[in-house]
Image (tube, rainbow, N blue to C red; front, top):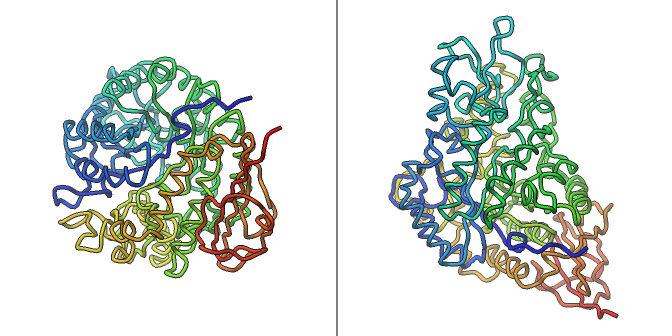
Length: 561
C-alpha cells in the first residue's frame, strides 16, 4: 500500500528551549525576541518546523512546564506581540511553529487551581484530582516523577491533591468533561492565531486508574504509579475526541510525548487513519538501565548499541505502513547525545556527533533536532548542587543525599553530569565571546566552559563542521523521497559495533552503515557496491571496514522492469 504523503512527514523539526536559546535584553534569560533575531540561522540550517518549549505565563517551578495562564506569555520571555512577530517572521521564511501543549497538569497558581483549593464545594474542585487521607496519610504510596510522594496535603480542606510531577504541578482531572472543553477551547484559540501544531507534554498520563491502588514498592517507602497512570485506555477516547473537536479541523502536525508507550499503544496513538495524533515520542531507546538502587534512577549504565538497535529496529519494522515514527536522540529532558551515546572527547566528538545524526536522520520518520545538537554540544561537569537549576535534580539530591544519605554528594553530581536534564539546558553557544553570545548579562544557568571551542560562529565558518553536516542531512531528506518514504530493512543485526540498514522505495536502494566504536570495525556492506555516496563523515574509506565512528550512506538506482 502506498504511503500517505503529508508535509509533516517530509519536515525536519528543531526544538528550542526558549530560556536557553538567545537573550535579547541582557537579563540572562532567553526570550522570544532572541529567537526572532536568530530565525535566519535556522533558515540556513534548513529546518522546516520550530517546536517551542513552553512560553506561556508560569511561575517557573519546572521551567515553564507549570502553566498559570495558557493565553499569556511568560513575562521573562516577552509579550504576545513579541510572539506574533516571531510567528510571522518564521512563516515569512518558510518555517512553521508548533507549541508545547502541557495539559496533564497546570501550575498551582493557575486560576482553576486557585479556585479549586478554596473549598470542597468549589465549582472548580473537580478540575483536579482530590482525595481524602487514607489512615491519616496520603491516599496511596505513589512516588512522583520528581521524587517524593505524588500527593500533597492541602490544609484548607484537609484533602490531598495528585501531582505526578512537582507539588506545584497539580494534575488535571480529564475524566471531567468541563476540563476537556476548557482545554479544547484554549487549543482552538491558538490554532486561530495561526500556529502549526502541538507537541503534547506527558499526554500518555492524562487518564488515571479511578481506584488509585498502591504501586509496587522497590524501597518500601514509595510505590510505582506506572500501571495506573500511563497509557490507560481512556487516553485514546480523549484524543479521538480532541481530534474531532480541534485537530482535524486544521492543517497542523501533532506529536505526543508518550512515556512508557509500547508499540501496540503507539499504533493507536499515531494510526495511519489519523484519528488521534500524527506521531508519538517513545523513549525505550534513550532509557538507561539502573545499575544499583541507592539513588532511584540516577546510577545507570549507558545504553549499548545492541540495546538501542534492537529497540529502534523494532519500532521501524512494526510501525511500517501502520504508524509514523518521531526520530530523536536529544531533547530538553535528556543528556547531550554525543556525551551519552557517542564520544565527547576532543578527538572524536565531531565524528561521533555526525555518525549519530546519520544513524537517526536516515531512518523512516520525522527527525527532531534539539538546539545545540547541530553543533555537537556536550554534557558538562556539575561542581555543586548550587550550580543545578532543574527541580528534578534538586529534589533527587535532597532525597538521596541529604535525607536518606544513600549516596555521596560527589557521586550524585557525577550522575547529574551523565544523565541530568540541566546538561541540555546550558545556554546555546553562539560564539566565543563573553556570555557565549547568549547574553550580555549573567546567564540563568552556567555556561558549558567549552563554548570557546564549540559554538555556532566557528562551525558556520568551517565547511567540515557538525553544523554543515546537519545541513547536508536535512538537504537529503528534502531532495530524496527514499529518505522520507522508503521501507526500512535492518542489516547486520548481530554486529556489536555497526548499526546498518537499508531504505527502499521503488528502484531506489539506500544503504546506511554507522560505526558506534572508537576502533575500526569490520563491515563489507559497501565492498563492490555500485552507487552514489550521499554523505559520509570521512573523506576516504577502507575496504572491508569502517573507521572509528564512521558513517556512510550509498544510494543505488536499480532499473525497474
